[in-house]
Picture 1 (spheres, rainbow, N blue to C red):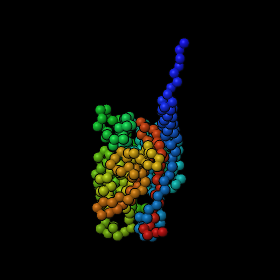
Picture 2 (tube, helix red, strand yellow):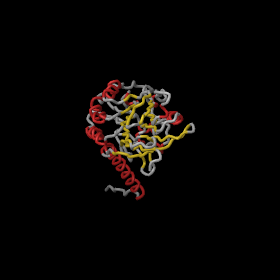
Picture 3 (cartoon, rainbow, N blue to C red):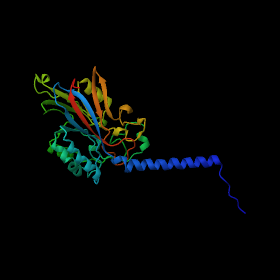
Picture 4 (cartoon, rainbow, N blue to C red):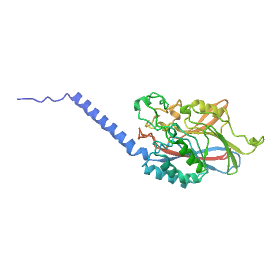
Length: 318
């Protein structure tokens, strides 16, 4: 006659705990992939950086859309952002996630291109994302395209930029340009993606010898907020810096925050509005948590996808 042994109570408890942990992990991944990844939100910020007497001015900051064909919910949300009627749209790159993304992305952004806009590219406007071990991401910034064994898939950057340009948005890739808006001259200086080490500083636009006496605001635009870039623009007198790239950490610990930024930015600065100091100057920096995710890692946790609405007001205004 055979006998069946009863597991030791401690071993049984450990087995139960392991099962609960595994089930919780699966549940978290499912939540991040099926719920939070498309739980889009708006973050509102206010900054008093306009010349005295200026009326409030609204900037819509978009970043890291990572669009793929078939993302109908994301496309609908993007089109709906036009209802905000921003005075300016700033796109800080990583718009694509697939070779066939350009046309549907431009269609989704078409209502927003009715408004004045500027843009710079990110690495995923040049190269499609590739699968990599998620644990390797925790060790620091990811490899640059071309550093791995496989050749990167090149995207149609030219068509993307042509589409933005035909929509009236200004290309700030290693360029500076002034745009008059609402009675204020906005001086923009932008760079190509620092994550690819393509940035080349163009300085600030120069129009006349007396331009500094006219009401103006200096806004710097970059995709990846590496410290060397923030240092340069801050020391050069920027009134505001806009960037993305970090995805806000993408997978965060509630009550703690981001584990990584995929650049040398401290994790507590992974998203949000913070001051940055360099060269005797201090400049507010807005890092967007991003709208999308890499096609190879389609989930978020404790880090909802976002666009940012910055309401700029006059200096000294209540």
